Image (cartoon, rainbow, N blue to C red):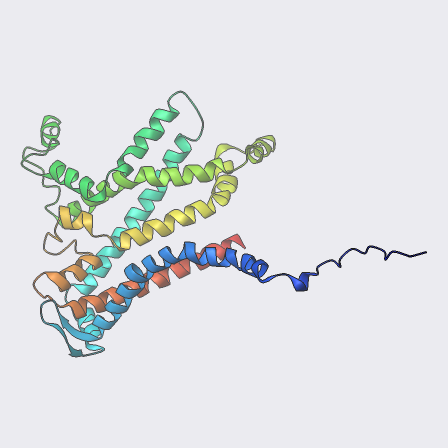
Length: 315
């Protein structure tokens, strides 16, 4: 009797014996990730990293606007930038402007957010009305307010005369104090709705159960706002503070359009001084670049301190 051999199944393929195509498929997500990130990395390198490197190179050179690079002179550009007669007045004015706008924008933004927090018949209209100015470009808003402040064509002159406030055309930009507060009014009108939106998102992220528990414990409105709303809104307030401080320290458009740094250079910001050194009269790109590096370093320090303070409070 002839016996037939038993049929046996082929051995199972182990993970170590996987074919090469399998390994290429495992590497494909990483390659796809690099492919997706490459355009952004190229954009950052071309429009952020390279300009900073060029500014750093210019800050250490005698670099004229028309003459180009005339050789190294570090650190003369930094010392001459600090010794400029407008440097410290510009720093002091920029800090004053930053403090005023930050306080007003945070206070008004929080007030508007609290006003439209609860849904009512007019909530949608109020939210839209407060947010509409933020859709207008800063340069366009500055031109609009420039016409509003013009002594010859300002629509505010007639109501002020009718109310007996003044007999002549009001010069809203004629004195250092009025120029500052007129510009602050523009910025508050332009950005209050934007900060209202950010803080409104933070308010709506607070659970209603927390407020209900506070009411059951007998807490009043002021106690609820002080001990519940403000602590739970700290992250949103910190974000708004960082955005407002950074934007105010880099103020340029509004003052360039409204005041041109006047009257008597009383409203020159630090960024305006950079522009003046580079393109107006002095044509000294090296000194302007050195001042830009100082401004960048100051911003990094200020933002680092703000982030550190926020992290400490959250801990």
